[in-house]
Length: 85
Figure 1 (cartoon, rainbow, N blue to C red):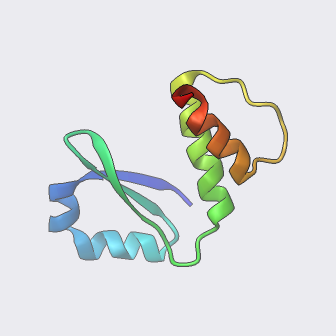
Figure 2 (figure 1 turned 90 degrees about the horizontal axis):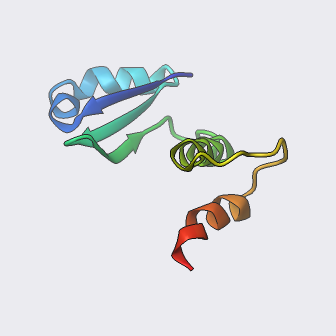
């Protein structure tokens, strides 16, 4: 499974081709002016894996060192809310 990033205009223009990629198991990230606005993923895709991917992106952005442990929804929410308190 791989990840593809496309702009909103390209997504609209090549929608059927992108759907074919999703059917193959790829995840499509749609951006507008460089900012992520949507994700196209196969139905029934592994939600836990999506959560891990979100945590990895967050950790890269904030340069957080993650221990080798099971990643839970609570971990993800804690990292997300870290700067809000």
